[in-house]
Image 1 (cartoon, rainbow, N blue to C red):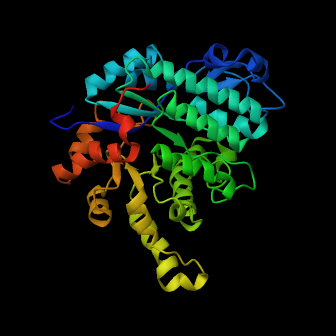
Image 2 (image 1 turned 180 degrees about the horizontal axis):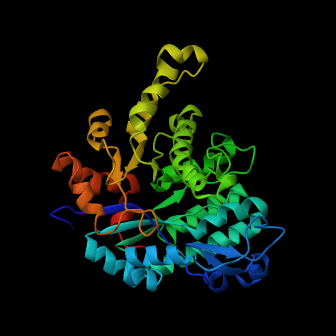
Length: 378
């Protein structure tokens, strides 16, 4: 609770422990996943390997400037590497009632699955079992989003069901598909149907940015290009993915499917939605993209976009889009996240009504994630 507002953080993150795979992988797969031999900032560095992660660099310690940056920003939480207990203390300190947490190092599940479907699936099971144990410290307040292995579709759908029904996941991430595969293909209808039947959303969070929307990724060694990669990657990938769900007919065929469009600001909606509408119902219809409804209508019916607390022009976004399709996030505890003690004061200073703030901080997240968000995990 903060200043009379109940608060849901719709997009936070794990910084998983270095021994995650050693402790949680099934014995048969431990030798098939490269060993974690170090850390680079918040990310695992794996031993060189020819099968799963061949492009990863050799290990090194966290750079000193990054270590100090994180220590200054997060204090004890960084020292204890975000144990569940210390996370809950931070949530109490800063006024966050519930956090929905996405993977950081768990992201590698998606890439591994495209190299070896069995290994990727085993990593997903291990990661989700760890998430369940982590959240069990207080499963009413700590929620997690599953990270799916798309190497084998049947296995992916089965693991999505297990994560939601058995382990308490409140969402699953939009899967990173094999090259040449597309979200609108019938092969993936089973996932969209499962999400509709079990009433959980798909969280879109830049899953394909290294393949599609961030041309500077190969130049990450330089700070400028690393910044350009991040500037471009998240919003462009999420915009493209949202459009794909709409123009590929997925939202039309699955009207109960919900999408959370996360960690890419919300200001682009004022440009992107009218541009999409113009291509399905306006003068650019000549290009052949007719749809039963306007893309903006699909968005308002089925999609929620996450806004940053310090995002300029949020009042204009509310005027354009309304206040029913926006949620709020901290990105805690990533290095580029807002300082945790500032994140709610910044949002509180936004020139929008208290009714809009209440919806963005709580009501819309409940609608996005469904009733599991307010229940204890199984």
